[in-house]
Length: 330
Ligand code: FPP
Ligand code: MG
Image 1 (cartoon, helix red, strand yellow):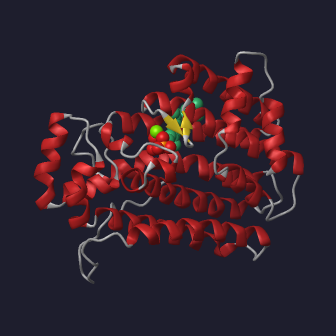
Image 2 (image 1 turned 90 degrees about the horizontal axis):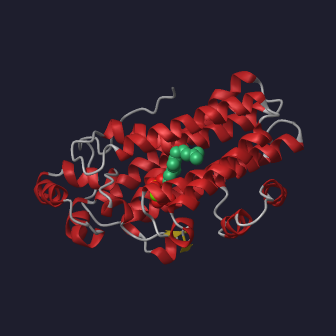
């Protein structure tokens, strides 16, 4: 991971004023999950160290570029606990800095045609997912299938591509690569559901982002879909959405508690994590595969925390509590 960090700094070397912005972006840090996935997945079987580092760095640069654009789309003012680039330098700078990172990432990928192809596909899916979400703002009729399709696009597709590229640049038997990609895909869906729950449940001191940003902008995520599916809360939520007022999670605190919307969403995420883990069964028990399992366990801990959120307990025979849509790759 230290080598990936070094590679990102090398590749982002540029003249002012971009240099200061690039420095700022790198200093914000982040969980670096995407490069970690590339490194772990490319380490299960032997392969070139330089390729792994380049692709891991490119993955993080693509992710960061997407966040620079996303913060403009979402009018977000905080990123990783610090003022977002759009807040510090304005929307235009954030978009252009995103373009720069994006171009640098693809220069890195040019040496690895298969990875280049997989990453380009992921970026297309990210844009589609983000657009789908944008066009569903304040729409109470958004279906669970559309929600899952949107999060597969905007988040899970890149995690899936990171895992796939890891396999592609190593000596992994080709027949095993789809399983690795599916691991990333399911993990990515769970990851985004947890992020969507966090928007309701965590303050900025814990998440590094302002609480309630999705709701404020009418982005209808899984917790709100659970409220809309509940006959007792649906009317009030519909009314609030119709008014297009600036909604805040506190305004829905009662409904969130009574319906157990956060816990139900966490259990949905948990099912995706279990599916992800199932995909690892075809791999040898290496240090890297164990680390991938640990990554899934770390996400599971987050789910467990939110699953303890009040709300009615689950009874056998109760109707399915989540979209039930099976993720499909295009
Ligand atoms: C964050 O979601 C945003 C994404 C996961 C993807 C954004 C994708 C694009 C802008 C299109 C692709 C563009 C490029 C340059 C690759 P969120 O808003 O739910 O998460 P947040 O709370 O962290 O902002
Ligand atoms: Mg956002």
